[in-house]
Structures are given as C-alpha cells and as structure tokens.
Amino acid sequence: MTESDTPAPEDSAEHTPVRSAERGSAAFGYQLVRFFLTPLARTLYRPRITGRENVPRTGPVIFASNHLSFIDSIAIPIASPRAVRYLAKATYFEGKGLRAWFSRTFFSALGASPVRRGAGQAALDALDQQKELLQSGNAIALYPEGTRSLDGRLYKGRTGVAFLALQTGAPVVPVGLIGTNEIMPVGARLPHLRPRATIRFGTPIDVTVHGPATSGRARRLATDEIMEAIHELSGQELAGAYNEVPASSPLDRIKQALPHERR
Image 1 (tube, rainbow, N blue to C red):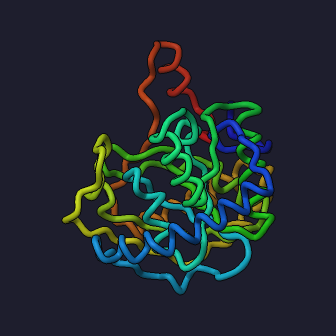
Image 2: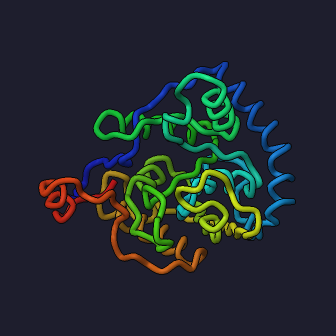
C-alpha cells in the first residue's frame, strides 16, 4: 500500500474488550502496584528521571518512546507523574496456573490491556481501544519503532502513533530511555541490579499542525517530528531503516522492499 490520504491504523493487534468492573479493579491494582513498586525500583536502580514537569497532569497524552527492553513498559509508568496505560501482548494474559495468574495480574495492575498482533480488523480494533483510552482522558504509552531494538540503534518510526495523535488531538510527549537494555537485555529472564537507567520526558508536541489524520503526508511529517525528538532525548545511533522481522520468504522480502507506509 502506498502512503496516501487514507486512514492508517498502527500495525498492532487484536482488541480484547475491557469491562467496567475489570477497569475499576485494574485501576486499584495499578495504584497498589505503583505504591509498592515505584519506591522499590527507585531504591534498587536509582533511575535518573528528567523532564517530569513536561508531562501534562490532566487530559489525554501519548507517551512516544524508543524501545530497548521488556522493562521499558515498567520504567515509563514508574517515572511518570501520572498513571500510564499501554497495550501488551495477549500471551501475557493467557494460560492457566500460578505463573499465568501472576503474569495476568501483574500486567493488568501496570495498566496494560491485552492485544494480539495482526492486521486488518485486528489493527482497527486495537486503534479503537487506544482512542477510547485517550477520549477518557488517559495517558497511553506507545513505541513508534513497533518493536524492541536488538542492536541499540533508533529505527524509523511507523505512522500509527502519529495517526492516533492527529485523529484525537492528544499531545505527544517524547520519551528517551537510556540503559534499560543493560538492566534487562533481550532474552534475559531477570533484570540485572547494577546498571542505572535514564528516563527523559521531552516537551509535548502538537502534531495537528501538520494536517488531518487522513493525510499521508501529515502522518509522515508528524512521525518524523516525534522520532527526531526521541532521538534528541535518547542520543541513539540512527538505523535509517524500519525495525522489521526478517522476511521468511522471497515474497516477503519483495514486499518489504516495495515503498509502502509502515503503520
């Protein structure tokens, strides 16, 4: 698909509805986990946190961050001056037994909502879930790169985050994470205790100046502005490419090479 003047939802995942009672329980669990986990994490890891004054205390906000480690989705809520919601893989909420129960309870308490990766209607459902959170005045965290960087470089941003910001009018707070991949590298089962992470919150960005959400040019310009701000905060080397899963077939390699909008 070429980058055209049509809506472009993020290439994310299948929506799992959240009931009102579950939301109330999750909100209580979030505050409870935040109450205990935040001082513990700050004592153990002594994170450097800057720019908290840049985060609007009320109203919808999109945190757009680089993505280095599994613990990024824990680091941002711990550092943020307000509650943060985000989407997590549905597999964290599935299964039976004590381990599955703990995973489901932990991620729900951290403000996560389950989604299953996919495209088409699944992506639209995930987008609707994010829109609903923003329209309710929540802050949500998203990763424009789409997935974790395995080599520490900053990859090109996909336009789904910008589309959501353009459609809802929510300001985007860029976030630069430094050192989270040293605390818990990709593949590690437990975090290391020695490294210190840095979480930097940047100045809110109003991407609506670039045009409507239906404009492919506006989505691209807004995404580039967001990624430039993240780069200034994180100081990462730029990859100059999209962070894509290696193609498994010749046809997939051809598709990746063709010009199209990475959602």
